[in-house]
Length: 115
Image (cartoon, rainbow, N blue to C red; front, top):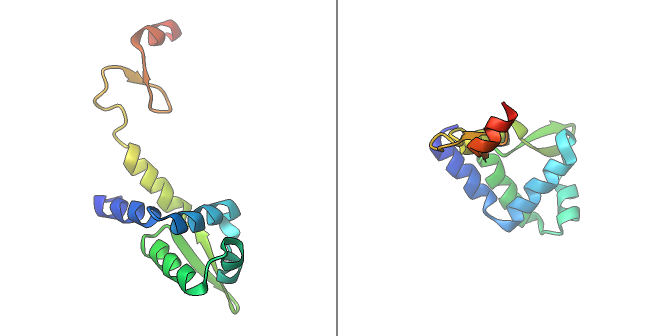
């Protein structure tokens, strides 16, 4: 992921309504929701939801698919994993201590005990 893409994705999530939409879609998984279902669950007016869906789609955080007459939106999990990877790709690269698998510095003494 490039810096501009990461900034766009983070900016898209930096809104309470968009974050609520995204989190609801994450909970739903690959099945997704129709706009009508999102409106009902989030209690937002259709134009407001449309505006926020457009922003999330533009940032690549959600994708849509058409099934007959229905349009379904779902979270783009690959894109978010890419964002998390981008944010943590240099984890502990300047640390004086080794890092554990969760990218937290491990004290040298604790490291010696496990060796």
